[in-house]
Image (tube, rainbow, N blue to C red):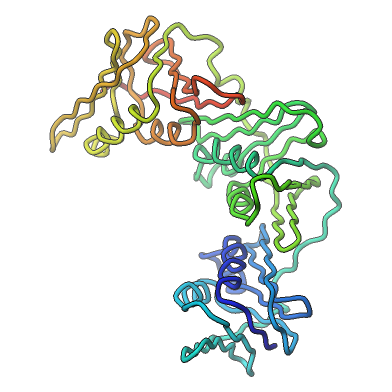
Length: 366
């Protein structure tokens, strides 16, 4: 195979395909990228055994063919090369990359050992504008669990009933929910999508108003935008009944400036990191006193102005969880809805066209 492609186009395509490859695997082929030169361009494919990401970039192909090369090595090289035309060729058992005076010789692996993208018969679909989908993913993905012992929590539960699309993520310590009230965007669907797949989809090169079609069958998800394709296994298992976690009522509220609260919590985290990220929040009239302590380093105190309703309560949270939620929620204002110091609190924007919120479990005051 022989092809010439711009470094920029190669880097963009590689960024998509590489996101699906596996860094730690017993199968070397899954840590590689499959390159295929054919009429129409250069196709790059990454796979971790359960997910495939493919991207096509324009290329001048003088000899068709396919080969696999180590993903991390290829990414490191391409990211460091200057702008220009990259010549890629398979010569014997080596793959050569040449640009100007630079020449790299990489070990080649047989392309026929790389797992192909499985065929799918789509039985359901959702159609969303790119900016709408990306906002939904950002609103919940921070709460996805990384606990491999509970794989069902390693994804985002997506449910559409014909009028409301709901996305939910939880790691059992906090839960993020985002709802889109919109009829006619697809068929009724309930699926648990791996967070990794959503992250790849979010990073596809699309304009804000471009429509993304998510296709589903019983076991997989597919997104195909022509120059890029993502196919992923769905997660199997019973997702927790998330609605039972959301407090049905609250008796206390703090309404605050989101940016001010974030900055104060961020400063308190300098010491809270030494104490399991524990930060105490104490309502005192028209302010919240934020405090953190470290046995070895000292104590910190910050204050945030609030509009309070029965808000004289003291409660502790993991400061990182609060910061994650504040970054994901939109708008200038934030409202904390609470009952008592031992019960979960809900953080939500003071103004939002979509129902977006985060439930945070409290910590012991300590």
